[in-house]
Length: 362
Image 1 (tube, rainbow, N blue to C red):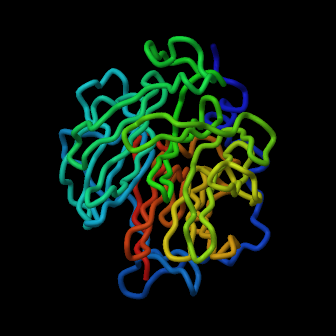
Image 2 (image 1 turned 180 degrees about the vertical axis):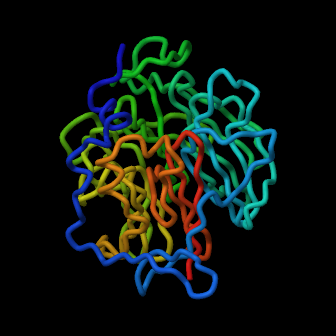
């Protein structure tokens, strides 16, 4: 079975999408300046200024960057990076860990090579765990210790009734709405875990922390609780409001706000392939594959747009695969972003040579 047209457009042909250049209507002005003396590139506006450092962490020579996908930070400030990897490099790790200053610490996760995708750090009781999901031929989710030991690993939740026979026992690199191709996690206030099947059934699954499947909601559709490639998901617990879900409905170029049980509340427009979300204080960060990172304020209005290179990336061919054409202070294809404890931001870009940027909050 071939990939559906909407997925092919999203992952391979989105550079030609006319929706790429859509501006969020209340966008705050973003600026790029040069700091005096040291020529440091700055991004943002008066309220949200960042010093950007591309290719922030460096790998030992025995490892190589591959297509970077997601980033996460633990309580100690260590940075975790997952890349898709290459199926034929079975012994190469897919997950790398760096200290807060970008120094390499350790690597693991070769079992996710060729399909590594979603990655989150989550505290349960007094211990932190790493949640990982993989797509392509792997079609799996797992809970690991921060050192990389497997706590449990699961495959397609057949009890949901949405997957083809054998999808859990003999996964293959087959795409479709009856296939399990998970992309990202979110964590509910009651301790349960949400997993969005962003490339497969376009639904959201609910698990307990032992990996037992409980329920699901959502389906393919035109919006308002149905999706066209729901790639990213996050629980929004900012302020005193009831927590809600942020779902990045990527191929619709929208962000949907849902109740925790999946009921549609509102829709935010004007994004260019929004990929995931994270929160810090009253801010939400939304990395967009169309060459920018957007910050939303407490009212979900645009507070800043960082590294905007939308017009160039969506109208010129070959930028993604040509690092010599990348511009300092501009993004190519932000695929994930997460906040550090101080409000700094790490950005992972979907490029074959790997690119992790640190945006140090000033």
